[in-house]
Length: 132
Figure (tube, rainbow, N blue to C red):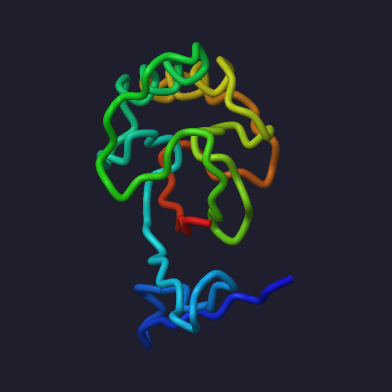
């Protein structure tokens, strides 16, 4: 496979993927590493009932809600803290389902968290997201 090359500030912040893409003429693909909250489906900076609504619309194959960009579309494969995950798969079981919606709702209502397929970030944790 193709390796990835990253550049970052001396303090470890602002990591950027500068790997060359086979489809380009030696221009690097610059893909910034962004920090988001795990479970913040619309990337507005908080885990809220709107994230539940966005997730449920995805599960029901309805039109997506708007997102604060840059934000991965629900169901998109992204690298989260060095692991490939689906954006919106709150319990890390490999699919987006009503259970993810339930997990988010329990978080919003400050109820006990559902189990997750570990290792998995806790809902509301800061995660580093790299678009693939």
